[in-house]
Amino acid sequence: MRTYVLDSSALWIFLQRKAAAAKVAALLTEGVRERAELVMSAVNFGEVFGLVLREEGPERARDAANVVFQLPLQFADATIQRCLHAAEIKAKYRLYFADSFAAALAIERKATLVTSDSDFRRLGHGFPVLWLKA
Image (cartoon, rainbow, N blue to C red; front, side):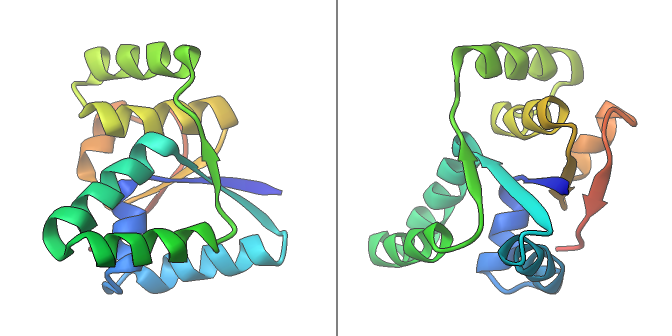
């Protein structure tokens, strides 16, 4: 079974129904069918929740969270080991800290990262990436 790590931009695209949302929806369908494992760092989920909260208000943020919690998506905690790994990635590749959690998780799980964020190009070919167009 293939494993995918969704970064903040992937979930944001899905929730905002942007052009690439269909690609994310297809992965989620594969997750429902148990043909793919979908994982997201709790840090990245918190970043998306904060975006919705700031841009659309608390009611919409709670609604979005309820939608996300129904998806076939596992959340990975920010363990001390993962925090240290994310900090190393942040320092080495000059990524935002939340992005570093997605990268650390993709490396840890030997997964494909799902993102529209071009900053991940700095990592070279450390893991496969499914690029989305926002």
